[in-house]
Image: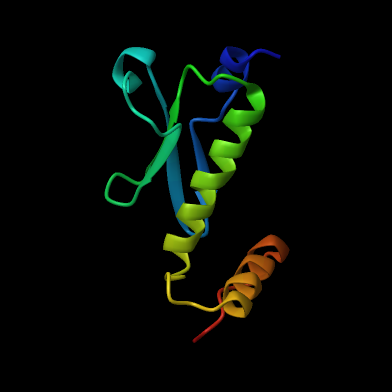
Length: 102
């Protein structure tokens, strides 16, 4: 599979907790000159992924990275939170448990 085929196969959106997060495939013309491969936007509720990724692996890594930003936002995990709280929150999400109360 080529990077272009992998990008084309991405769904239109993903679910993060109660939120539907759109996946926006950014054209090479729009992404020209940008250093990042993707971005999660809280106000827009979407993940932007460059449409001209160098490899499928980079596309997958970027999508996972931006999805993790969306998870941090959706479940209220902040920069100052400690490792155990963060790991616990991710473990709960993977297992389908409701969010922990702080």
